[in-house]
Amino acid sequence: MDTGQVVYITSRLAFGALAAFFAIMLWSKTRDAAWMLMVIGIIAGYGETVYSILKLFGVIEEDGFTAGSLPLTAITLSNLPTIFFLSAFIIMVVRKYGKNP
Image (cartoon, rainbow, N blue to C red; front, side, top):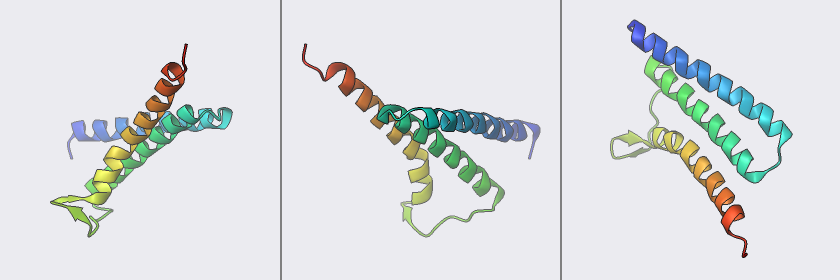
């Protein structure tokens, strides 16, 4: 493993951990559905980062469920944050533009 990969892995873990930490702090202060979905998306993104790094190091083996040549776990974890962010944005848009003038 070269220096670039170490910097990449370390930065993803460090910034992801900071984002997850502050997201959890925000979660304890808000009960708004849109913000909670954003927090869950950040935490899911960090989970995907940890999973991909563990897979890179060979700690986790691919599961038996695949869609073509890709494991379903990797597909699900990589798309889960975006799904939560999308849900949060939809809630925000409906709140903003869903009311009749």
